[in-house]
Length: 274
Image 1 (cartoon, rainbow, N blue to C red):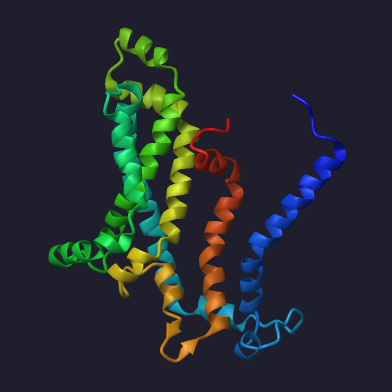
Image 2 (cartoon, rainbow, N blue to C red):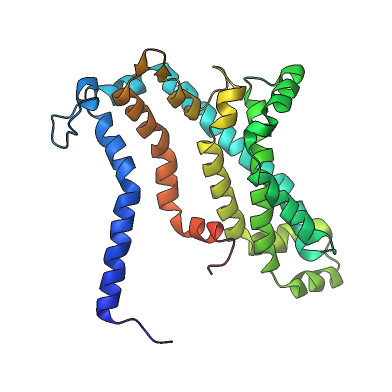
């Protein structure tokens, strides 16, 4: 395969940096706004140079509200990811190693549920949650996040499991290995990178989910996404405080994504990148 010339590589690198800067600019500006006063934040003239203040960030950290919402985000994200993996691993195993003529249709149907607007099922979900007492509870939020992410989890695990040679599992069965032994000693170790990628993506999706958290919680189980939305009030938007809350909300998940970017790239491409 012909390698691109030096000038072409430089041009592509410059283009990649320009696109990256454009994509990152809203986050940069939000971080800048978080260290402004409210007067500087709503100034009609965009201020790039100013005397920074960390009062907004400090007030967020000092208030017990932020820690309460952050704890909810951590518990709900990890809980829903664990539940999705527990349900998704056996489902993906069955589809990858024992496919039927309806497996592809089933996978496409599962994926098609992600194309449906969440607001379309808000009323029945809200009524069910109200009747069974799951409104504003972490258990309820874990349940709805699990259901929302399960199609993606099954699809990704199915893709990774298909990369595992079937002969290895067949050989273990001939040696007398049980289903549980095959899963624990063969399939899970061989698919560990894929399972880790799937789990990381599920955590990020759960952390950033906003629609269900705003509509199904109020105070007790509300995560950070609901905390950010609370700064939109009838009195108006407090841009500096809103930006400070947003920076603190995305910081943990941004660091997690940065540290695990290689695994995430493979996960987002559904195993296409080796």
